[in-house]
Every structure is written in C-alpha cells, then in structure tokens.
Amino acid sequence: GAGVSQSPRYKVAKRGQDVALRCDPISGHVSLFWYQQALGQGPEFLTYFQNEAQLDKSGLPSDRFFAERPEGSVSTLKIQRTQQEDSAVYLCASSLGFRITGGGRETQYFGPGTRLLVL
Amino acid sequence: AQKITQTQPGMFVQEKEAVTLDCTYDTSDPSYGLFWYKQPSSGEMIFLIYQGSYDQQNATEGRYSLNFQKARKSANLVISASQLGDSAMYFCAMRPWNTDKLIFGTGTRLQVFP
Image 1: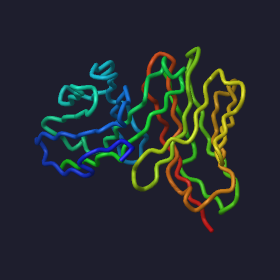
Image 2: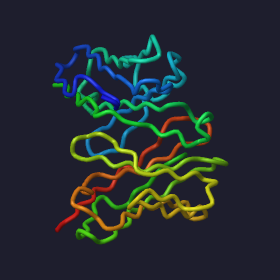
Image 3: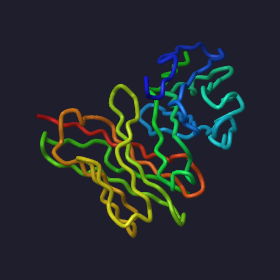
Image 4: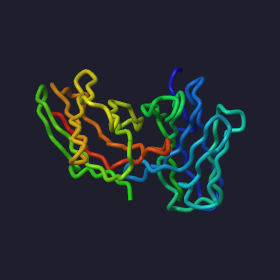
C-alpha cells in the first residue's frame, strides 16, 4: 500500500516481557516519528529519525524504550521488561522531508497504530 | 511551556450543519505550524489542514477551514456541511519553530447525527 503500515496491529504482553513494534514508512520519506497515545489522550512524542539518524529521543519515557532505523527506512520500537503503564497505542508517522525543507509545512502521515496491552 | 488546549471533550452536530471545534495554543516561538488531524475509530490519524503562523490568509481544504486568530492564539477548525462520516476524534497540534515533532491537544469527539 501507499501509506504508513505498522505491525502488529494488536499486541498482548505479560508484564516483564520484551516487545518489538515495526513501522514501514511511506517510501522515500526521510523523517519518521514515534508517538504514544494513552486512552483518551492525544498522541505524545517519543522519538524522531531523519534517515537513519535518531535526532531526538527526548520523549522516550525510560531506558526500557529503544528505537532504531538502521537503513533509513523501516523502524522498530522496542520496549524491554514491559510494565502495565506501557499499555497504549503506539503511532508511527513519516514525512517526506523535514521542517526546513518543507518551509515549515511538512505534513506527518500516520499509520494505524499498534495497540499494546500489558497484563 | 508549549501547550495545546482543546476545551470541548465532545460536540454534537446535525448532518449538513456547520460546526466549530476550538483550539488554543501557548507558545512564545517566533514561528510555528498548526495542524488538525481526524482520528476515526479505526485509529489512524488523518491530516486535515495546516496553518503557518506567518500565513496571511486562513487555510481552507474543501469543507475544512481554519479560523486563525494569532493575537488570541486560537486556531479553530470549521467543518461545513457536516456528514455522518465526519464522526470521529479531532486533534489540534502544533509544531514549534525549532523542532519537527508535534504537540497534540487532548482532542474533541465530534458526533454527527441525521
């Protein structure tokens, strides 16, 4: 498809288990973002890549969260030793360029999200 | 601190009527971008409209228009001729001037009834 895809769509994990969430951005998109959306809230920024470089990881809530984009395309968000508070929808977004190249109007296109439930 | 505020947790509108969804923001940045996204029950965030802080005219995209009042720091979304398919969560978001990340509000749930 032409849009951002994420897998799995749903993930149930036992507390303490490690999980890996995958994001396939739109082909050719330079920038990739991860957001966390708790129930009834707006998305909150986690981390951001420009090609393979992770430029901002200020939103990662703890060192249990790790993201990578080794070839500048597909990205994986890994959560180690999951906790119940990690239960949320994890959204991935991509954009063709970035703020400077787009004159400020670079649009982020979102995937359907991965709904993570930690029991 | 930079913040987006959406004070309407829920709104109802009759089909074919217009509706305004409120958004105010807090920033001291010299320039910034404002976005509206729609999130249906399927979960995907769908981009609707963009307004740059230095844009002279209010943005419009089909049935969507943005009522941008810079001095009041508001960026309300106006949906004209509402359709049943417009029922969804709507999020206002801001991109600060020195970053590419988006800051979202808590959203407004819009329900369109026949």
